[in-house]
Length: 390
Image (cartoon, rainbow, N blue to C red; front, side, top):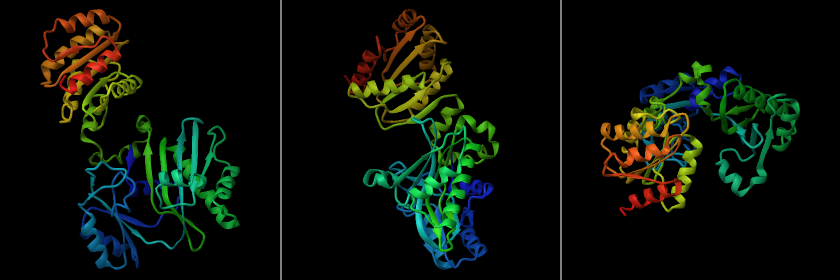
């Protein structure tokens, strides 16, 4: 689950992570009032969407008067903001964050992420703040500093000194400040089951203090039960409505840009299925994991969500019957086609417990657009052919 910048900064405040003062608003009138409360004389008007690159997309602008605050708020609020982290359709800006300007002397990049290879949190930093970290990694990778932190010992002084040294910070006061800043960020990350904390830019002011000028956070959905305060920050308007609907039925759904709908049980099998479709010359239209308890209702809902995508020309159902027997899944698929109007070819490959019985059930169902795949490769090939109208 992701949160907005203003929400990230609310969490920062609880951990003593310094940020400029700011107020979230949802109207132009409130934007001007917020600017008056903050005092100025310089403000930053920021679009609040779940995506980075807002500044490059025109969603973050500097105002030097209350008139400019009003003008920029009117311009940004309600705009469709397209960045390198949104789809081509962009995201509608429904909230603004009005923030005090800062005395910026230097800009850095700082984040805490999970290094899956090392199996521990990784503090990542760079002197190239304000730039896309992907561009820095590609063009000047030597400017990225990484400091892994073993959670069994937590953040220690030597981690902070390694970070400061890598950023070229040698002044005693500034070194102390960056170490303190990183320590608070690591504690926030661990306490709240975060998956990502990113500050770009982290700025150093004229008096040597560090401020989080931006804040991006993502949290582990599976751990939100431990953090009701963070769960309450969820903004469903920022999420794909089909993904939200799917989650209500225990389905994991992610829309893609292909033409073959995929319905699979198990994330690993889903990835393998999509790879096989690509190998056969097709393109998957989605990732859809129905989980280990597929039944007529969940399969029907899966069909319904997949078919909302007008680009889908065929559906490949690839299910391994382990906990749930294949014959029950086959009957569920047949019932689902009665519940939902499935107007594209459906290719079904079932393997596992009672797979032969399931194949017979499907063959005897007399459903015109239902095709049985003998194995993964055969099923994927038939799905690709069906999508091409062959």
